[in-house]
Each structure stands twice: as C-alpha cells, then as structure tokens.
Amino acid sequence: MTAPATNIPTIDPEEMLAGIREWVEIESPSDDRDAVNRIADLVEAQCAEFGLVVDRIPGEAGWGDLIRARSPGHDGAAPGLLVLCHYDTVHPIGVKDAENPIRREGDKFYGPGSYDMKAGAYLALYAYRHLARKGERSRLPVTFLFMPDEEVGTPFGRKHIEAEAANAKYALVTEPARDGGRVVLARKGVARFTIRATGRPAHAGVNHEAGRSAIREIARQILEIEAMTDYERGVTLNVGMVAGGTGVNVVPRECRIDVDMRVLTEADGEEMTRRIYALTPHDPDVALEIEGGMNRPPYEMTAESEALFEIARAASREHGLDLRHTTVSGGGSDGNFTAALGVPTLDGMGADGAGAHTLSEHILVSSLKPRAETWVKLFERLE
Image (cartoon, rainbow, N blue to C red):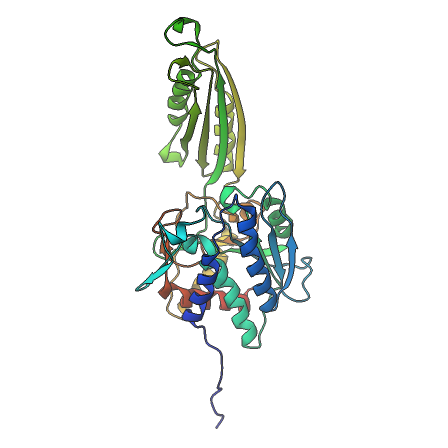
C-alpha cells in the first residue's frame, strides 16, 4: 500500500495575511511617486523571490514605476494569462496611523488600500508561489502587471495593459470581490470632463450690472448636466468638484467643474459625450470651454467571459466556495481595457471585504484561503 504523501505545502491564511500587512504598511497614494515606488521596490523583490522574471518600467509624467513579472521562459508573445493588479491607493499618507489604523478585529483586517486592492494583488501572487512550492507550474504562461496609477484612470499604465492584452488568452483582475464575495463580469465605462466658464468681472456693489458671472453660468450648466442622468439606461452624471471666484464682492470671472460620467455601453458613451460637447452658454457673454472624454471603455459581459466564470465557479465549488457574479459594477477598473479588446476577463478576483475608498476599509481574513485556492486551480487548469 502506498503511503500518503507528506510535507505537501498548504495555503496558510496567516502567512498570507502577514504578507498583505507588509504591503498595507507601505502607504502609496497615486500622486506620490516616491511612496508608490516604495511599494514597487517590495513587489519587485517579492516577484523575483517567488520565481518570476521581473521588468521595472519607469513611470512617466510624474507617476510611479510599473512592475511586469512573467513566468520563466515567457516573453509575452505566446498566448497567456494576464493578471492585472495595482498598488496605488486613494488614501493620503498617514491614514494607517490615524483615521484607519492597521489592525485586526476578529475576521476583519483594516487598513488603507487593504481591500482595494493590495490584498487581492498579494493573494494572486501568493497563489502563484504556492504552485511553485508544490513543484508545479501554471499551464499557461503568466504575466503579472502591477499598475502605479489605476486609481486615477491608468493614464500611464493603459498602453502597457493593452500591449500585453494583444497576446493574452484570458485576463484575471485582482480587484476586490463585491457584494459578499461576488466576482465581476461587467463594469460601466467611465468618462471625465472639465468645463470652464469665463465671464466678466465687476465690483459687486459699484457696478454689478456690468459683470457676467461665470459661477451663475456654471450653476445653470450643472442642472442641465445632472438632468442627463438616466437610471433605466444605467447612465449617471455627477458634478463632483466646483471651483470659482476670487472674492465675495467680485462678480466672478471664472468657474470650473469636474464631471464624472458612467455608461453601460459604448453607444451610450458616444451619445452622452456628444451631448456634453453640445452644451452652450445660457449667457451669450460667457464663454464655455469643454475638455475630456471616455477614459475607460465599458466592460460588457460576453459569452467568452461567462465561460471563463463557469470554469472558475466549478473550480471553487471543489473547496466549498460557490462563486457568484454581479450583474454590473458601477466602478471602472483595468479590466475595462482588456474586455474592450475582446479578451475574456474575470474581475473582482481579490479578497472579500468592504469599505473601498473609505476610512473603514477592510478585508475578511476568512476569504483569503478559499479565494487563493481558486487562483491555484485556475493557474493549473486554464489552457
């Protein structure tokens, strides 16, 4: 009778959590290049330690560096598995010591960037290393991309994602799980616009009638823009920032707004962009300047992405995790880029938890092992 195998490595959630904590300890807001590069230093070293071949691509236009890590022997030319991650966060330096200190409370592990998405990125990397520890390798060649600028729309990293996607058979995205552990098969497209009004300044008391208020003009434009929201179509427009004026006793010459737009389809994106650019001043003596457009295309569900999900779901059921998927997520991710290029994409493959972009951000430690086990099986089986 053959003796049972011994010393087979197991997935250790405490070991995984220790690695996640190390990443979360390095705060990395998108607009702080030095901070982002500190986490890049750690990721670069760990990717090499875990058996990947690493290239570090210097950031442009003030962004941090990008890490590309491939399985040995993979030059990116053969059809492979693309794993998309980011290590920048929305939180400024200091949140880990004040508003959301790093700590564990029962099943919850708190800290800025823990849920979105340092836990998911580390989880996928850990699963790759676990496979190597078992003496096995991924069936498809693997490329990990770690973005320094995802939280601001990936202006630098996008071209690198699209270049890798050209030869990708599948894309897996380590964004956090949604709504109690659900993965993501569709996301809204995202657009950003800046609209500036230029009027005519005047003294508010002496010759108010000579002025042309840029703030008044923008106030009327805000009502018109937000009235374009159509919940039935999944179209939303939000004026999230307003700035204008120089003094309370001056008719304001300038005012600016920043607009966020979300759409479900490419056609809606094109239509709504045309409507934004068709805006005209209510006051003919005030000039409007409009710039911006779509920065993430819609990520629409396809038969191929559903088939990829079913593979992941079948694998997860073997260890008691019954994966589900959302109908659509309103937030964009780097998965929007791969999906728009026709690559079957499975998003939301990171840790379960809650509080993305808030001061209560946390992951559920209990989600780490079953989700890592799913990653291991996908590395083993996707072909």
